[in-house]
Length: 139
Ligand code: HEM
Image (cartoon, rainbow, N blue to C red; front, side):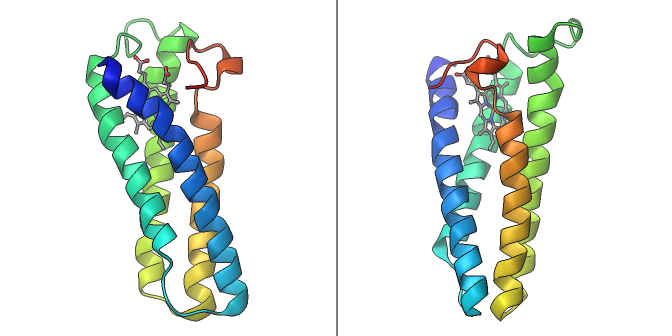
C-alpha cells in the first residue's frame, strides 16, 4: 500500500509533464498542419492509465475511502471527488486520442489539444495539493 501510494503520488508529476508536453506538441503540429502522430500523445495517455490502475487498487485499500463519513471533507474527496474527476479526465484523454487517430493534418492535432487541455485542467483541480488540507504532501 505504501509503495503504491508513493508511486501514485510521484507519478502525478510525470502525468503533468507529459500532458503539458503533449499539449505543446499538439499546438505546434496543429499550426504546422503536420500529418503524423506525436509519441507524446501516446505516452501521456499511458501515464494517465497507469495512474488509473494504481488508483483503482488504492481505492479498495485506502482508509480515506469511507462512504459512511461523507460529511468529512477528506473522506468525501477521496471516496467521490478525486476518483470521479480523474476518471472523467482519463476518459477525455482516451476519446481525444482515439478520435485524433481517425483525423488528418490540423484537425488531428487540434482534437488532441482540446481534449488534453480539458483533461489537464480537471486533473489540476482534482489533485490533493497540500494547500487544500486533504492530508497529502507534495511528493
Ligand atoms: C491522472 C490521474 C491521477 C492523479 C494525478 C492522482 C494523484 C493523486 C495524488 C497526488 C494523491 C495523494 C497521494 C499522497 O497522499 O501522497 C492521490 C491519492 C489517491 N488517489 Fe489518485 N490520482 C489519479 C487518479 C486516481 C484514480 C483514477 C483513482 C481511483 C480509481 C485514484 C485513487 C486515489 C486514492 C484512493 C488516493 C488516496 C490514497 C490514500 O492516501 O490512502 N486516483 N492521487
